[in-house]
Amino acid sequence: MTPSVQGPASVARRIFRRRPWEAVAIALIGIGVAMLMQPISITLYAYSFVTILTGTVGFVVVSHFPDQ
Image (cartoon, rainbow, N blue to C red; front, side, top):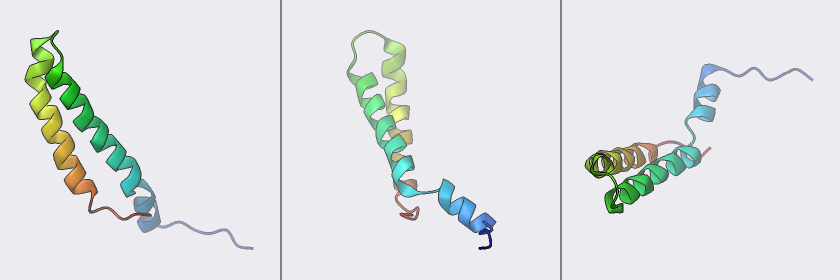
């Protein structure tokens, strides 16, 4: 048996899979919503919109990644 050689395309496919990056984007959206609803820190509230927006844009971009 010869060992399989992985080229740059297969490494990129392994790194840019949809499922783990979708989980990160969804977690960012959830963290942003939690920051928006907390009553403790005005700084967290101020950055909540940026966090939600980053997670949403990330989700849109990641939705175009391949499944496997």
